[in-house]
Image 1 (cartoon, rainbow, N blue to C red):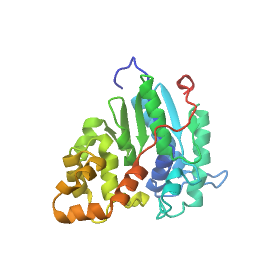
Image 2: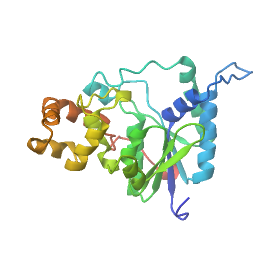
Image 3: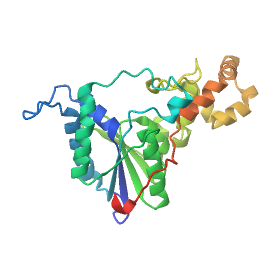
Image 4: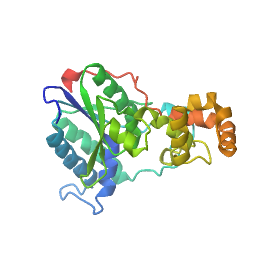
Length: 265
């Protein structure tokens, strides 16, 4: 852990880690006493312990989605509509994980109307404002838009494999695109995992080139007459509404009304 004299906050994306653990451990893990499936909770616990040992955080927060629709669903009814319903065995893992958090004295954050990513974004911004370095533990690349000088992402890819993303690592992964421009890329190419449409016919390679040239979707449309080739310009003109809306859907909110007391984390 760098700068040992500073405070370090670990924010855990609970849903992402439990999902990856549950699906990453292929063989069922059933407790003898209750007959309950626990592989999601087991994987989460192992990852939690490994991460605490390696990164030595001074503060920890755990975030979860809620089952209720969010403001994104209100904006776009088809948001995440392509996702299948979670197995009952998987859903049961979350209550176990919350018991684990309680045993570790870890504060849990969840709020109807928002996703865990929005809570992560809000908590990490508050941490920056309080001179606290933040490490986001997740398996979801959406949070890479939050990476900054003081906020880094520990990307968990299963089997205890983790990669740290700072600003340089994000730029290298996305061929020169900055963390703050991730939402512009998704606005153009969309995101199939979240059913965000983007601009039909524009893929990752074209989206990256456009944002490299114009920096943002807004500036791209301010200079739409300069865009070449003509085929791409016409696609952008015909699907401006989808591009703007897709960027909105991909943007993590950092102003969620949360009560955050770092002295209690």
